[in-house]
Amino acid sequence: MPESKTYLFIFLLIIVIGPVFSSVLAYQKLQKNMKIHIDGNFIPFPLFPGFQVREAYFTWRDKVELISGNLNVRYNLVFFLPSSFRIRVQGRSLQVKLLGSWAAQEGIQNLNLDFFEADLGLDRSGIREIYGIEAISPQFQFRVKKSETLKSKRESAKELAA
Image (cartoon, rainbow, N blue to C red; front, side, top):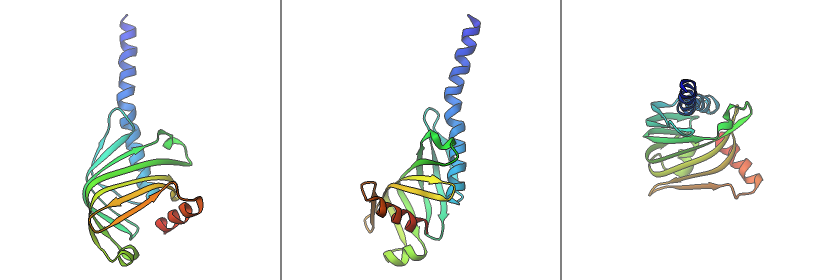
């Protein structure tokens, strides 16, 4: 009987620690694949694959700078595979600054996004596929959905990665 309690304890420990450990690995892989460093308070979700970065800050490729906000990140557990993985990033009330060609193209630099969601396929080189991106603010709305043709998805992914 004491042996079954030990197995139960180990099983419960794996259920709780497994997602936390995988969240740390996914957080590191996200930063490595996107070639960014995310500052903020990393908080793993204990029972499912995901984490939150509170008071997040990052700059991505002279395209966009997240000045402040909380990001929720969920990922597919197949990120352990070497090729690619899918990740969903969501945030509300984000302060964002468009940089470089994006700022020039949109004619807007500082944004307060009411809602942001990105559903991306990542590999070692960065964004492999865009399943959907949505950014909404009073001054700015941007949407890319998976229902687009394969050609336009590839063009969108290349444009976003460029």
